[in-house]
Amino acid sequence: MASAMAAPPAGAYTFTLNPASPKTIYLQIGNGTFNGGQYIQGGSGGRNATINTVSLNLSPTVIGNGTAQAMTTDSTAANSFLDGYAFCNLPNQLYIGGYYRTASGNTAAAQVVASVPASLVNAGGATIPFSQIAWTSSGNGPGNATQPFPSGAFVAGAQQNVGGFASNQWAESCWTFSYLNTVTPGSGTFNGTVTFTVTTP
Amino acid sequence: MIRASASPAAGAFFLALCLGIIWYPGAAHGAVIDDSASQALEPGVAMRWKNSVPAHGPGGSDNQMAGTTHILVRLNVLPWLHRKVRIYLNFPSQPPGPMHMSWSTQGRLAAGELPSGNRQLIYAGPILQPMLEELLVIQFSVDGRLLDHSVSVNYYFEMDGN
Image 1: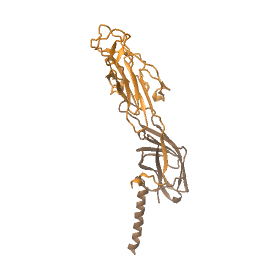
Image 2: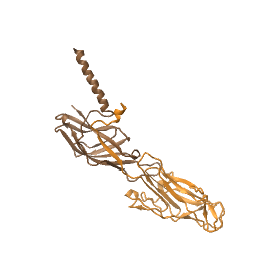
Image 3: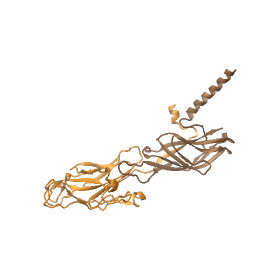
C-alpha cells in the first residue's frame, strides 16, 4: 500500500524541476562594489580590492589611562547596497554586511571569520595587543535590533567568528570601533591588518 | 436466486474499490484521463528565486523558488463523448514536499492554482470532441531548501463523469 501511494497514477504528467539559481554570496566590509544598481534594482555583488583603515591619534596625556578612545574609519560606505538605505554613520562606523543565497536543504548560516594578528606593530617593533580594539554593533533604523554581526573585541592571534548570514538573507551591521587604552606602548604608528573570510556550509 | 445474483455484484464492487485505492490514492476522486499525447514545450522547469532579493535582517529568510513551463495538454476524452462531465486537475502530495502550482489557459479549461495534495475543477460541461486540447502556462513554486537537486513532480487530470 505504501508503494502504491508513492507511485503516480497511470496518465500522470511528470515534470522535472531544476534548481537554476546558483549559490551566491557577497561580503562587504567597509567599501564594496555592486554592479547594475542596488540589489532590489537587480544589481549584483562585485569585487572591490579596497582595504579600509580604522584608526585614531592618541594624545600622550591619555595613553594607558583606561578610558576607551573612539576610532574612525576612512570607509565611504554609509549606504546599504540592498536598497540604498543610509545604514551607517561616517566616519565613526564601518559597514559589514552582504547576503547568502542557496537552494538546498542545508540551512546552516554562512560564517564570517576574522584572522586576527597577535599585535599591532610600529616601525621599531613595539607592539599593542589586538585585543585592545573592540567594537559595538548597531545600525540606523531597523538596524538597531539584534545584530547579525554583534559587538565584540578582537581576540589576539585568533581565528575569530564575528557573525554570519542565514541562508537567503541579507544581513548587515555597523561597527563602531574603540581603542581600549589599557596598555602603555612606546610611541609611533602601530599598524595591523585583520582579514575577514566568509565560508558557506 | 436473489442471493446468488447479489453475491457477484458485491464482489465486483469490492474489487473495483480495491483498484481505486491502489490507483487513486490520497486526493484522487475519479478516473485518470489519458493525457499521453500532451507535449511539454520546454524540457524541464528552471526554478529560480521567486524574489530576486533575499529577506533583510535577523529572522528573515525568503526561500521560495518558482519556475514556469508551457504544456500543450491533449486529453483523450473519447470514453466520455457526448456526456456531461467534470474534469479536475489533481496535484498530489509528493516529494520533495509542499509545493504550489498555478496555471493560465486559453479559455477552454479554467485557470487556477492549488497547493500540492489538492485538486481543482477546470472543466464542467459536455464532451463534444474525442480530444480536448489546451495550452497551459504552469508556474510551480517550492521552498528552495527542498531543491538541492533536480526532482520529478507530477500532476494528472481526472474525470468525474456520468
